[in-house]
Length: 389
Image (cartoon, rainbow, N blue to C red):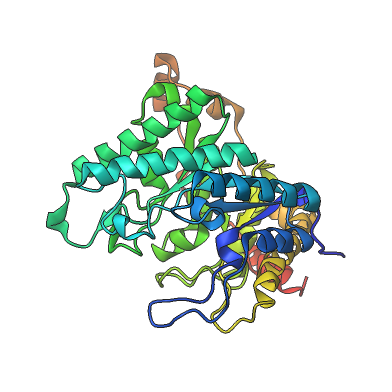
């Protein structure tokens, strides 16, 4: 079995991942800067279908218009030459000092307005390079001092910014979709729109004319930081048609944001994530948001991404084996108890169906004593994932 990536696998990675130089709160950089063009070339040559970036990853903050245009022209030449595309763009609204206390939710209207201006330019840049998704991660949209912000007003300000940008995308005819990325904490003590559920509820309050433009960009690490079941969170967004982008990686639960190599921690959860995407033929890119270890060499930053792709392909093969395993599938089929009359009765409300249901008798003891075989089923999954089956 070959686990070499192909373009049709649609694997993508952020330029910020391989460019991460090892800087952290207790240490200075350990790797030299990685030129964005060399970064794009390196990702293409290990088999990536596409790449993503923050505006400042590609065009340094404060660049002139002429310098910006020169970089964009060079990026297009590299993309054409290497056969790689830009799939997602986003805007860095967290790194510069001006955003030290938020961007869209800052108490300073000048900062809020600058954040929208910077975002408009990032959307233009993404459209010019062919991105079809614009991710919004509110890394500084939060607080440490509870008295410093009115949370109700902050959500209103957040909504105004999202609606403004979504209307701009529509007005320009870009055909781009916005994916809001939730995170519970870090770098702020608490971040607004902390989970997928928060984002889905927030989307339901947006102007109806742009609601279809806005969806969710979950990240495995962010979900696990909050101790959530990532598979269930992502499944809800998928079922609602709001899974617009997805960041894959790995994370020890409740830790700081580790951005570990996909599949390197909870293999079972990673397996069921892959199964969810593949079984439902999700059409989005398999995007990795990961970081090299601080001890990694310059060459190993690309090994990180290659390892993510290989792990996904290994797990995709396991999904196929799972779906074709007669014993596993037989047990899953036996879990389903079907009754066409009951299904019809409870599918949608009518006065007649409610009356009939109230009169229906159920074999409660038989239902309660029914054996489900979960121990055996879970062991079969373990055996399959570990190669014992």
